[in-house]
Length: 111
Image (tube, rainbow, N blue to C red; front, top):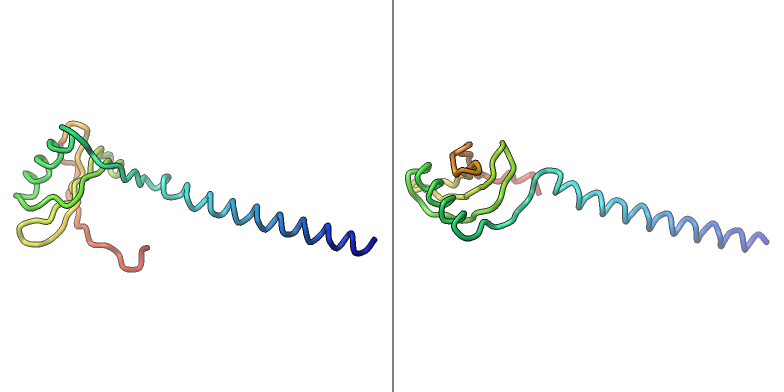
């Protein structure tokens, strides 16, 4: 009877460990979406308008990436390398109005 109890306790402990591990993975996956990481590309006419507005805001340059965004009340985000070589994120509203232009330096301790 003692060996049956040991087997049962080991099985319960293993199942609990699996459940906790799965919950931790699910929590990590949902935390990215809670931070507003939409990371969906802008397409069609909206992409062209967003790029045009961003380049006007930066005085020219080269568009590196476009995506939907919801930071700072924005709808769109356009990453631009400016003529001086610096890179910025231009956040635009749903009417392609500039919400903010921020430096796009990655934090080496983040990631």
